[in-house]
Image (cartoon, rainbow, N blue to C red; front, side):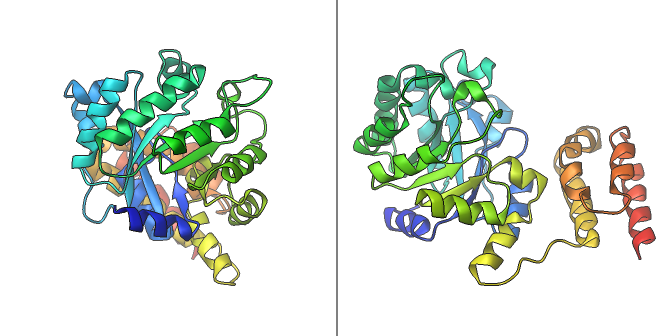
Length: 324
């Protein structure tokens, strides 16, 4: 993505699908983009696995022509390996390259990757500067407001420093790393970061509905919003944001639409992964797809214990017939 296109993208206050491991794969990205997501992110690309030739990491770099605009997110603890991985990512043709400096999962943060970079903000800035110099695409960073529990969160000064070394946008998940997903996201930190820099700041955390998107933008003045768990629970949120921005009342998905998208997602997963892996993989989306569907709770309970594709399809069809 050119510099002008990048600037134009964020001038429109985009709504972005967050990078989520085992969630934001090409199949879910296509669904969310069709429903209105402006930009999607890949799953996390482990730079060590990528550089060691791991096929799974390599697959995450493959972007089809209809899978754009998509940003590739990389993570790791070694600046040199992050630079090497960024060059490989650039060759894949993403919209931009994002560095994960916010994943709180202990197995990642403990070894210095993800939110582990927040232990040494100076080192994070130096690493980001090296990646920026290594590639011609825009480089962005996703992080948290701090490790926790600092007396003063480092995010505002960190935003200034990252902008100084050429980072083009910053996503702020408004919790500390130690909070994980507990407690409430404090959007005030995203507002303070955006007020301190000219680059776009994207607010993330506890944004689940179209109304939340509007409120987050109004309260923070940020250039965009990012949805993660809210998109898993309700991918139609992107469509509903577009409707509100057009001055229309959002139309909730009908039960038929919910069941239809569940079937579509299931079959796409089977085509990509095979039945044995795809059926259990699809379970993580059941709560969202079957929400507000009469008989959906019973169907979900059954499918959570079923391993057979034909059983899933028969049960979905049966519920569809019951609703006619």
